[in-house]
Length: 167
Image (cartoon, rainbow, N blue to C red):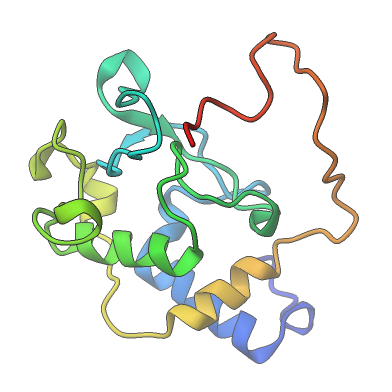
């Protein structure tokens, strides 16, 4: 991101350029690839969760996560509804075209959020054309092979480790 093109493969470099051109960089920026700001995306509810997560003040806004070490953080989005990065990119493609019907469970967005509530930055993404494979290659370049992947036995909040997913 600082101009050292030798740090990336040709595919990763194309992916970085596409990441910037589509507008992903508007929210996923800086050293951690996050603006750490809540945005309403209308991510579909995860049927494995006991109830819908309303996010910040029940507005369905969730903080932009870091894109570092994505290979260790699947499933994706705040509620783990997308299993793969192609699923995530497909979701962004759909909401940039207006969201609505289709996609997982018959809807692209959660029923609690209308298309006009989706953050304008997400609605303005230019997801037409380009290769999602190149973007995924670029995201893979953000992994640190020395990242500590151990799961702690407990966390400072006291919440159970692993979330509240139902079988």
